Image 1 (cartoon, one colour):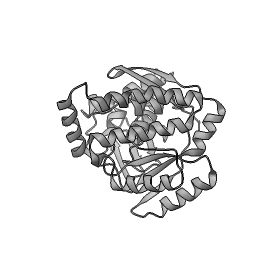
Image 2 (cartoon, one colour):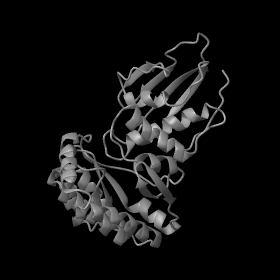
Image 3 (tube, helix red, strand yellow):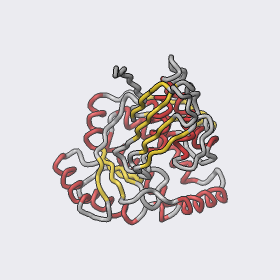
Length: 308
């Protein structure tokens, strides 16, 4: 993301120009009175921090990850935008954790949607985070200290697979929510899924990636137990291929359902990983692997002064 800052000589009200490049959309916004008629998330974000009236902004946003891929893209974009806008306050007023909280409020309070907290926290803090949500949306955040060998192995073995279309499962998720409300807080699979977080943390700190992969699979099966359609047919095809090449773990990302993506922990044998990805990329239906790596630093803002 890039923001160019200019003097608002004529004190225009619609003084923020946004280029949502993934959508080929360009539009102007009054940050003091957004209309939310297009890309409401972006408009709500620019309305969340005071933009000085004497400034005009030209904002370009672009992501290499497809929209709706269930990888926290909306939360990440919101964090990046808020983090950059915070720099305009000179000096910046918010910590990464506070930026994550602001981004969460954009989706829940300003736009009235449902949102977890993990996407915003991970985007802001970076690295591998253990999040203890003791009272929604309040949490304690621990950034795990992994040894270099584990970091390198994760970068080499984690594979992100786009399942061919953007995530669109609201109706299905409403069914799951109603089912869980009926079952109540004692529903065993939900409690078991919760406990997997601590087990995953322990495995990663110890560098036991094969056990971590087993936990990924266990989580995937708990998702399946909530509703069979949470693991779509495209994901099943990818999982079948992953098994063929001795992958150690796989998990549908986000809440699951039609579209989105799946993460695989590949075999530690490079030739097996290469063959697996080649076959996955040949499945068709828009299914493809997307290169990814750990972002250890999280939210980072740089500035550059340009003299015309």
